[in-house]
Amino acid sequence: MKPGNVPRARVLVIDDTEINLRLMRAYLQSEPYDVVTLQDPHEALAHVAAEPPDLILLDLMMPVLDGFAVLDLLKRDAPLVPVLVITGLDDREARLRALAAGARDYLMKPVDRSELLIRVHNMVELKQASDALARALGQLEAANRDLDAFAGGLAHDLQQPITSIAAFAQVIQRNAADQLAPVDVSHLNRIVTAAGTAHRMIRGLLEFARLGQRDIEVVPVDLNQLVQDARTALAHEVEAHSVGWSAGELPVVRGDPALLLLAFVNLLSNALKYSRTRERPLVSIEATARASGHAVRIRDNGVGFDMAQSDRLFRPFERLHSAAEFEGTGMGLANVRRIMERHGGSVQAESVQGHGATFTLLFRS
Image (cartoon, rainbow, N blue to C red):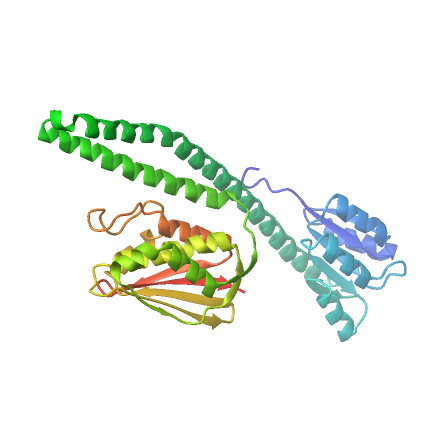
């Protein structure tokens, strides 16, 4: 739909009294609305199910099915359609009950025309903006799925030629290196190294694409056990560098165990890699409860990073240190962010260059 080509808002009026319906129709048809008026609440509910309006004006006191019962059914069957209650009941309890049942607002009879039109305009505008945002988000999600599928397919197709390049270069290294000039041996070594780097990047890209496509399993996850599993997976790195560990009591969160394990393996591996130049690498893990959930912090005493560059940390293939200093493809932290976003959470990073880094995982309740 082109900008400016906004469809006319649909307003449904439900009232058992014909004179009230005529009055509402006269008020509303002076504005650019398509107005439907119905006396029978059952017929009105069927209309909502077939063609949800942008706004419902609802009388509370109806003999066939009162407005409170209609509100309960609308909350179940059409929760995104806003309802403006119009009532002759000058009763605070009734108004509060209607708002608690799902009404967005209410007006007292007799209705002031100007006030009615202002409230209807505001509620319709908000509903249409919400619908436009939902459509945009749906289009963005579809585009992201297409991009993930394209990236996954491209990475898959690139694996074979890269593997072949590396394999044939290694054959030449084994069988003919002694027949080559030193400069050609050096070039051959670079080919093998570059092919290995490309293969790791392709694997990282495949993993990144799959994280956006796979469904997640949401179950209770004990982070104490998860961290133990992550440390076990990294045992060879831990033993090689005599790491000092400090771990506090961690919470149980809801999430996908396999994906969260991958996130912790990436973060702990990152902490070990960038602190290995220290005489004794130190890694600590602690958690604090928040009103909105839990914050889990992973700290190291490594080289840290420049906070001015922190926005690059979680981008795919971005690196703040050269490959000559620290190996890697720049996909680990990008995967951590995607995993946390899939869980409705987030990840933050803080550092003082030369004095370690802290990565905080924020889990929502």
